[in-house]
Length: 151
Image (cartoon, rainbow, N blue to C red; front, side, top):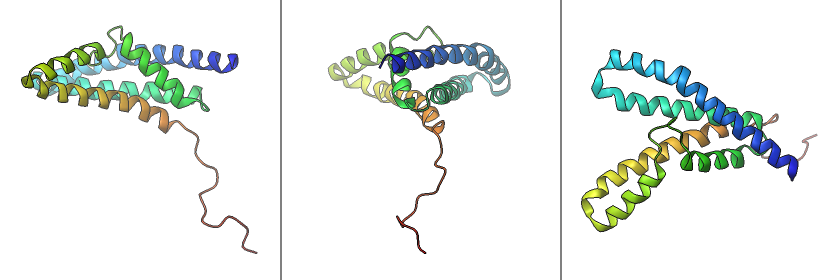
């Protein structure tokens, strides 16, 4: 059990490092380049797409370093990311999402914003989990309908 916790802690530390490196060294320069190329109206879309790529890469690295427990490690990392974002993925604001949900129950004009924010969060966290799922080991033998040898 202790060994499993150490492996998960190592994976999460690596995940934070990977997310920091990808965000600061890759995403930000590409975003400034894309802003000049695409224009200001496409900047939020480009930022969301690059954040999804950064989270998918982070999930992939987390899954590669903890192959047996890729999904639990990524889920723990996702909870930590929801609580402590450190400004690395500005679109993830879970506390704000809950406040928006409470406001939407009080006034229907917040409903459209709630749906858009919930879809954005699902896309971001889905990218993280998809990256971890893509890192899982492949089967060495294909699945078979026959369980025995046909000799």
